[in-house]
Length: 184
Image 1 (cartoon, rainbow, N blue to C red):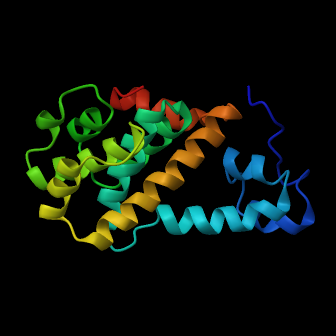
Image 2 (tube, rainbow, N blue to C red):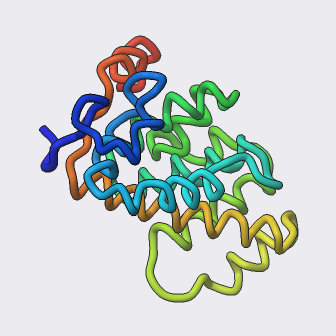
């Protein structure tokens, strides 16, 4: 049960009704609709930070799912397990990002493991990123990729805390899909 009322099209203020025009926009919008002045700027930032960008959806999903796992956000883990599969990640890759199997079992490429190392250093630790993690990531990825990914990780951490703090519920259809995929 969420800690706040999740507004729907009948209860949402008129200033945010456009977000409900195509049906239920989900619990993040339902919660943010209670503070309409934050809804549009938040969605604008989050959309840009989590959208495909220069590095593409595959690597964005690495960052979003792995960060959500490290932060322990069930809502985001569930949602982005499904999105990761829809984005072309294999079940094995998803299991590795979720920490269910070793990363080496899911990712043969050193370049991808270095990117996951960058994610782990930012989302799973405090303090500066160790020099060896930076060097490993820079051997394979341009600065613009690491900057973009860092923004994605930060935005994900924000959403992780938002969803966890407010105990946002996972949609039943997402849970059913994950059960079918053996990932519930």
